Image 1 (spheres, one colour):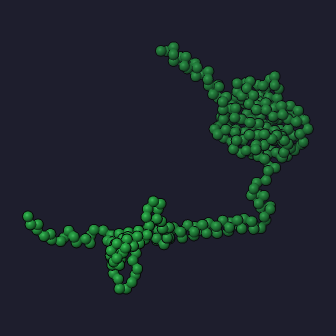
Image 2 (spheres, rainbow, N blue to C red):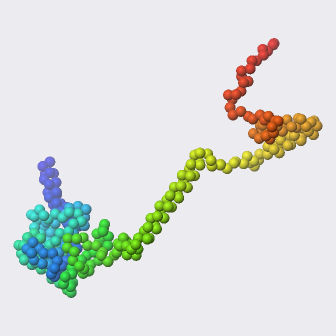
Image 3 (cartoon, rainbow, N blue to C red):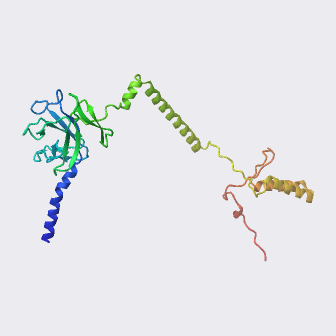
Length: 305
């Protein structure tokens, strides 16, 4: 049992450096300035060269113990002290390291200068994993910095590296792309386009709402006429033609107009037809229910046997 516990603790201690290294891989060198004449000053009041590092992750990264170097054969040239509690970088934040070339200046100082034509390496705390690099051009103009620009502010994918105005402690973005609001302000300084679009949207919305409410009101109030269903279906006899045929048959058989008229009236009554609205004729219409039927109330005569 004790042997298993010891093995588990040993494996945990062996994996701690790798777990820590998984955080520092989210660090990026975003800006470098070699000839600092009018940019920021360090804690000693000097215009030193500087390096900007950014945390592109969504969690806090402790970069204590990582290294800076400009020599691929010596990646552990300058180590960031791991005992300093200030070596924690919050999500999407940047930190500045000064490269004055002097030793023992502090945690945020490199002990070697930034040489034009060299490559700056940011190395993990294991001493051999390169996190990020940035090549410093030999002809970098004075007063400008070498900046990495991100084409997507969410993904932070730095795909554009070029000299630009120094922006220390600021997340770099593409300054050559004009925002849509600025484009609209430039093309429509008086705001006519925005006014027309806004008023048109409001009027169209009001018209659509009027049509919807007007139609729904007619539907609920019963003012919308439903299409009448054609009762004359294929395979069924026309009620009027059947009534006329019955009337003609009775008249030919019995030669009586009264019986023909009664047959026609009974057919229209049973078929739900509408009688002519003469003032001197009473039309009997079918009842909607059995409430008015008085037949069950009639007294039945006794049957004699």
